Length: 361
Image (cartoon, rainbow, N blue to C red; front, side, top):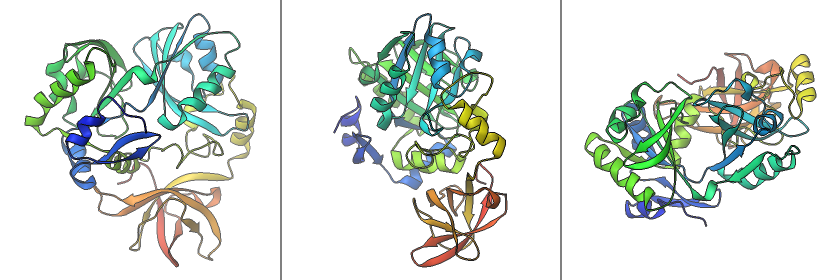
């Protein structure tokens, strides 16, 4: 298994460790519910250094990004970021990602999912016919997410950048915890607010940053958070997890990501997705809450009132914040309307559920 710069920190803190995307990652420390509550009410820190980072530079950088991503990166100016997706020739999702504009038209950073680093790199490189400059900086880049309603207030003393007023999906570069050239972005995967910090892992930068964060954060209740709570937090918001809710066979339109699919430019699979938009997708990703006692799990069947299979569960959990079981899954479009009654097959029972909107409430 691969390690992040913080693996030994997690082990020393007594984290429950497990393999994730080829990395030895912390699943939980004090317990998923406790960690989840810390992020929703105060602040928590996630090691997400396993994520992939690519730099795209040169006069053809924007052209390449425009051709392989669904969102319109031409709208990005320096210091702004954008959620997007890579699509394959059939309209499926190669990956979802964030595009950071480092220099307008000339330099960008793409942040991709850990399990897809090699696949995404090969996909982008295969479409690089104009020879934009590509650099895979994943192995030398550290990434921490400090999330929660008090995250920026707690972290502000560590930087001169005004992170308290950093607009959503923007970023700035500067000094953080005494380390130079740190990229601080107002992004995250929890819906609880906060920042993510990217830095080059050299000269003890990871050790310095981690120690400084806990030096100022621990007295104010900042807690280390594992991937277990990361999953429950993102699910409550209705955020997709690649490999569960979206993959190479699901389209952005089916997944409710039409808002990042812009037909004002050319990109891979545009004609296919335009046809799908006109005709309407045959299936849609919906959120649902259980009306009977039972927890939906990945790949459980979703059925209608007659017992006919109409889809499958992609993600599900007992929501720590809401105190009820929730899930996401694909169903036939005619059964995707809000308040539609559906049934989840849990073991041998059909348990009633109701289609609801995101985020869950």
